[in-house]
Image 1 (tube, helix red, strand yellow):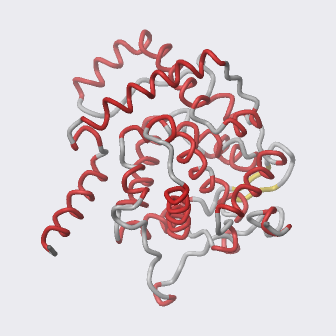
Image 2 (cartoon, one colour):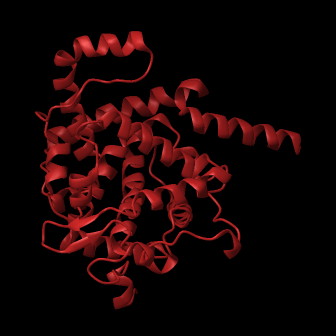
Amino acid sequence: MSSAKDVQGPQARGPEAAPGSGPELPARDRGADPEPPPPGGVLWSLSGDIRALLMLPAALTLQVAHPAVGAGVDEHSVFRTDPWGRGERSLRSLQLWVYGGEQAAEEGRRLRVLHRTIRGTDTRGRRYHALTPANYAWVHATGFPVYQHAARYLIRPMTPAQERALYTEWLQVGRILGIHDRDMPQTIEEFWPYWKKMLAEEIEATTVVRELVDVDQPVPPPDRGPWPLWTVLRALWPVLLPPLARFRRFVTIGLMPPDARAAVGLPWSAEQEKRLRRLCAVLRVVVPVLPERLRYLPRARAARAGWAAEARRNG
């Protein structure tokens, strides 16, 4: 049974924490950097799989469903003007947390510096700072329930032991990001009451949430990758955007945990659920038989290959 303190989850330290009162920038002389998740762990298999790309929109939408996080993104992010660049940078960062080795902690420090100036007033009139522990921890916390839920559809249901391992590894990622243990529930038993409390008391359909699931929201055409590809995409963008926007909305809402979906107020029908299950059934068959270079994202593939080569050398 969790205590009342456990149910509250991460604690805010005042209405607007100063940059120095949130996750700290650890000095080199405070000890070793936090370790990234272990090679061969649950996250190593999950977060580099190309199917994880379909999970990210649900997690990102849940992050900005928090009034403070949504306000910060609304006021400070370039997601409207540079969605492709922002997505590329976010994916690179996520891959570094898991597969970056010594670069993981450096990436965590970079992110904390980046967020030190992000502050303002949220939709409820409360002053916020991006590094206020309660806000910063929520952004991280959303990953675990989305991974746990979406894996049931796209890969396979996790065993209780795998779920516990995933949560333990996600806490390790949190330490890389500078989240103190006191600001995150330390067990699954403590996490779910925190999760339910956040859904009941904090989460809402913010302006950014509505934009992310709006199929009529303008999105600029891709501006990166091989120039012949993006040149063709730019020419066809008026035709491609509507179905892509509908698909984005479909997977965003469909792969979001049902209790979170209800808390945000996003509609989902029985027919949509059937379509999602059919799509995921195909992906569960097709993706595992793809060659490694197509199944895993580049950084994940390189890290997995290096780990396998080291294991062979060590016999």
